[in-house]
Length: 101
Image (cartoon, rainbow, N blue to C red; front, side, top):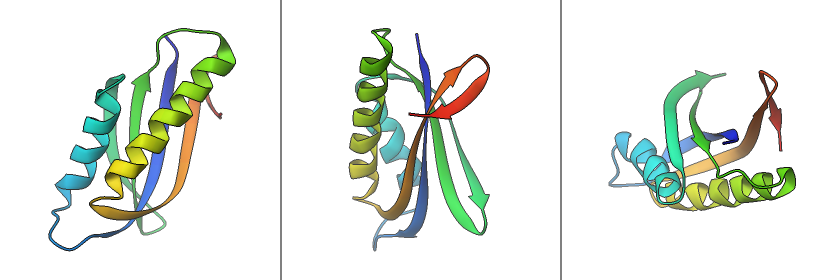
């Protein structure tokens, strides 16, 4: 199964939400359609960034990428309920490297 990563910068929490709600929303959104293999929070240039790795059922290459981008957009929409975000990036693992899709 093709492996993808989605990265999303978190700008600020919306009122009434705890920091943990960001990752919870992201994992729940992706988990409804795909297997989430891992997730992590990093601080990059002083900005929190969540990264989730997930798999997509194997189809032809372009269809996999389209499905992954759609899943990432759904994840961002759910995270936007609890936080303001910026810079959604979707990457695909191919031959040991992560490349943008």
